[in-house]
Length: 601
Image (cartoon, rainbow, N blue to C red; front, side):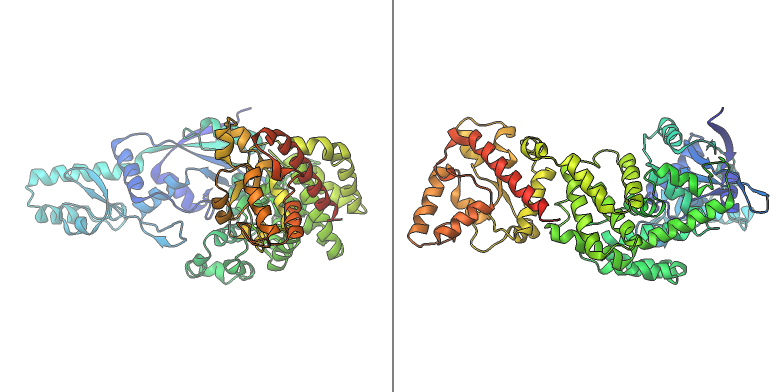
């Protein structure tokens, strides 16, 4: 069976197909990101007769309607939008929507005498040698003879030269007759095959995710409001990054800004919390999985096409229902109350900023779980405990590392079907966080030099939850230091270890040697051995003086060392004790993490 077909269409016909809706360009599939020089080069390539590559469309399946008739599926553009929009802008004179969501023209000028294209500017507009907007030439109102007379007069051309200009204009207009290859992917292909084919035939090596294909499909659908759902997702995520663009979106998309969907997402422009910032893939995955109870985005593509998984037919009512469910799921994700309640569930974990949970998959499933349990009518206090426990379990076990879809699929089905969702959490904990995990597995995982390790981050979260102070800090807490992007320093100073031949990065950068420490204290410690700098600190404390740490009470200093999981005997250690120190501190860090997890129940 052929997996795709290849056709050649003239530029004029292709633009006509798109204008007629036979090929759908997904609305805001991507903002137009090409600058004027790329549009200029594209026109020049067409003028020179050079190939400009293929565009790729995916044939939507034909859908059986309730009355028994069949609706022919549109073809959705999934690659080539920038080229198509460039041609529409330069030849047809259409405005494009840029990354700032403002509409603007890209005007390309042409010099018939030199046969050169340039991005139009004030200087070219003043020069009689240039056609300042080639779209004028392609316009149905273009009067060729009048143009030639005026151009020849302004540039003092004789009749022979005007004839040459006439030939150039003919060549310019012939751009519309140039062929562009269109690859149509078969409607019966599953999304994995589509992805593979796309990668193989895309000369730029651009990789589109399954989420990209889903977003193309929903944004090209106006019948069931997919284009509105797409805008909800896109604008919500955009405003997280650029809240100042709310007014631009409102002013430039007046039709959408009058919808209840716009009012439901506008709040995010004032959100300052950075614990959970979403991309369109995140919103799509959370909305789909929490609403449909499935983890594989390939299933969403099929459902939006109207796939009946039992009969293998494509039915209009299934497509309609799927678009509605996805819309409702997206609205639940971007709902201000839901979003902020989820953030408030995370904060008691000691998550003071987004850098502490680096796995977006963990955060996504945490949000999925919150929405699923809320729809089930579970009590809020129980939801909070279950979500917090699940987030930490999945971080500690790496449950969603790599491709999460199969795990998402399995887990969401369990949480939807279990009579008591807590039972599934308990069973997972018993299987994954046994004594062997705490005694052997986690200490081994702490044997790493990666400062961004999720296990070190959980240790910091445990310190935040306990409101521990920074190492040797009198008042400043770990949570405050993290909130201000505090510095991580070495308990055994790096320069000290290197000087004593412990000089590989993997040795001196062990996370068991890391601690949050005020920079001014670290400066005073310099490159001294723990035995040296701790002796000075203890002497000052015994004299009731603040010294370099600010701590003046002996019991308070011991409490501070305990909070940082500093092992006994540290104050007498030198480089010869370094390995023993690392082993001892890892054990203490694990104990703290375990107590932290147990406190979540």
